[in-house]
Image 1 (spheres, one colour):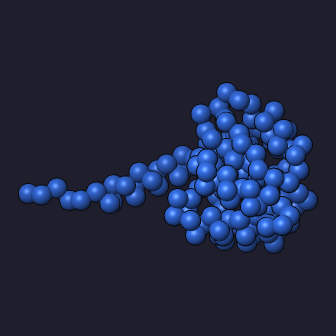
Image 2 (cartoon, one colour; image 1 turned 180 degrees about the vertical axis):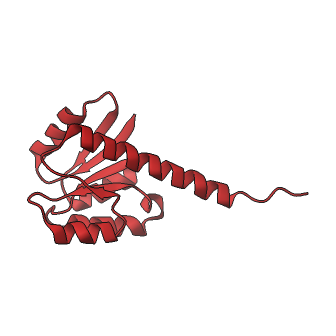
Image 3 (cartoon, helix red, strand yellow; image 1 turned 90 degrees about the horizontal axis):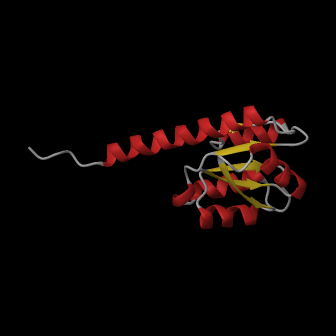
Length: 139
């Protein structure tokens, strides 16, 4: 089961996301501000974060920047969205290693595929990094 942290100030979209993705493959936690999202990411260690880049108080780009400074979550895959679309925020997020941008309203098949791909890519990256860190066998 993939642990998803969904960060969005609009409470109805969190419930909508749970309905769209279902509970068979995904365990979805919801945070409503950037600060809550940062705390939840550190506490719950999700497999992926879905992030409204336009959340109030601390926007999603700032949250992404702070995540990248935390060793525990530096490689957490993040898929961002803006509604209405905001190409400036989307571009800045991608420059800060956001794994991708998805569209609202949610398209279940597209979003599910993006989540699966981002999580799989991160797992591959972890495995590759772990293999590089293994000491050479002595002869």
